[in-house]
Length: 171
Image (cartoon, one colour):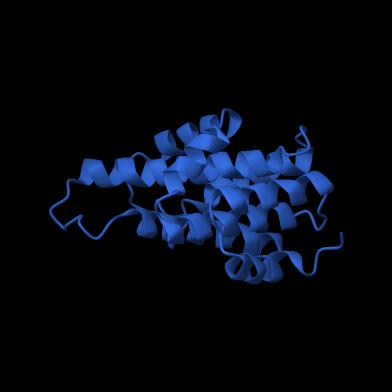
């Protein structure tokens, strides 16, 4: 299951990027702008992953190992930084620094606030991370509840997402 979660997070981060780019962007957009936008979305995702991993204020060995795998998922073929993408090593280092010093939740929420699909995508990511250890603590439930409210996720979307990731996890 952990491999599916990791692969899924890389794909969700790419979808988040896809939703972040507004239709007004055209194909003449410079390569540098596209790289910066991809990095911005990746840093938002990685920051959210960090907050989800550290809800209980401690990082286990397993969570530390998972961090490397999660960031690595952003460099798979169907993700933000596929093979051939420039400066992958530099970007990877930056994302690891971001995980260790994440954006505030307010920054994450403000980034997604005006884009319902991006907000829903980030909620998917949070549920995947929290469900990855096969248990949900009370503070994790509260975190998800607060996140759903802040991101303005509809109750119907929230139930659908939670059912997909959290229904098999014992409380």
